[in-house]
Length: 152
Image (cartoon, rainbow, N blue to C red; front, side):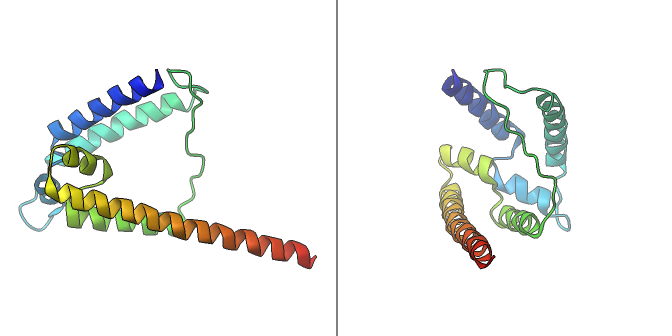
């Protein structure tokens, strides 16, 4: 049931990205070009997505299980730290350069868009690099905690 639900949800999301123009990097870059021929149409798409998301999170916050019986796993942290801000900045820079973000990039790849292949490869490489850095960071934090504990 979970796989079927995931497949249907992904298909609906992908079709929505295609219909809204989010899978078209030219349209996205036109939206981001505030000093040129700005295309504000994606602002309506984003406003609609934020509205739907806000309602969905409000409902989900009151539930302990999903509609298909899985545990709800919602973010608990509200902290705006340096890592979140840096990641957000990198995301925005990548979006502005490529005209893709992860969801539309995968949809465009499925549509045979060559630039999406380059984007998705770079995205996977970035995710791998993050994982390596995060593992080293966690190992360093663990080692520091152990050093402090043994010094007591």
